[in-house]
Length: 110
Length: 114
Image (cartoon, rainbow over all chains, first blue to last red):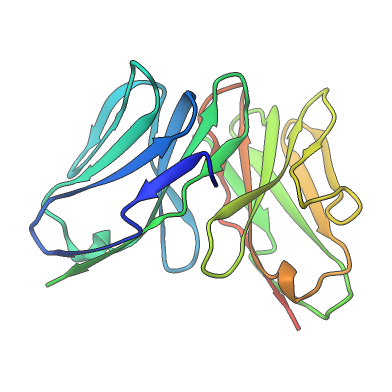
């Protein structure tokens, strides 16, 4: 939606390289979630952040705690199985509805 | 753990007919349930947000007359797509949460309209 700008829209990575996805918010957000959508369409939750950073294996996410206007997802040592479409979703302070970004289509190549 | 089930996973309906889909939260109390649609090659649009003890709030371009929702208890919600047409096809996701915390999503119901 207009409140969430996700970039890049598409990305190709060679195996073993690192990259970062980003979501900018037009307003202050209370929390953000990152997902990967698999080939069957299911959303796999990667991170939920109300502030700070979280790390899980080769993935790390951060949510700007000061102004709460952007979040990043870092992928380290990309593997073929990381391919998919990544979405961020965020909810405004005081508003419980999540707004999704347009997604980043990631392709990891050998 | 917190899980959300959706049924059916896939469905096909004829143009002009209606289709009901269900969402069940297991392991937590779904005080709010949000229904989303992902049209082909697009992102997820919020259809409506249902919060226990509050009226269901529909987003612009979505109406109760077209997408009636029921949220009778803290574990179950259903939504019907009435008079489905080609533009209604897509993946319908249910997201449930307790209070203002993490939203858990079901696997979705994929609707094909013939």
